[in-house]
Length: 221
Image (cartoon, rainbow, N blue to C red; front, side, top):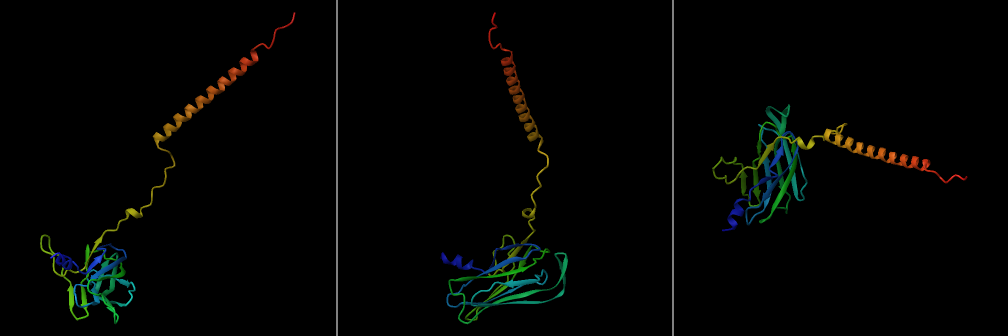
């Protein structure tokens, strides 16, 4: 009974599940094996044409071959201040002979893709997961509405957020003049120092004058 929720939650998902609009993003698909007698030998991810991604590059995975397919769009899509005319349609990872995601295991498939569209808040990236016994699981269901149960095979979802420019902001240049409170304190301390110096000089001069005016001896008759 405890194992049932674990298996049910082992979906094909993106990790991390978000990226910045207009930027390139590293996207990883976390792919578990949900069967007990067969291995995963293929993963195919489909990209949307209405919010296209122009380019993608995959990370080499030992024992797997990746193929990025692109195609002209039916009509240009304006996003990120330009028209996209050709975009990624699918990325397919295929296991070489003798390689698979064994039962009880999972594998991460990573890519660098972009720029992310700025015309939507999320990308649905439907995926097909093929097993060595020819079973195919299609992860393509859209997110459930609020209050509705989650779909059995949800599509991998990538949330798109606005760029965070706060981290790129340059620190303000230091002011040429000190603040009024700092300046007043400096003048006050300087005045005390000057007064102390004048006082010390006055004491020294007084002592010298007294020394000169003091008689040095008694005159003889």
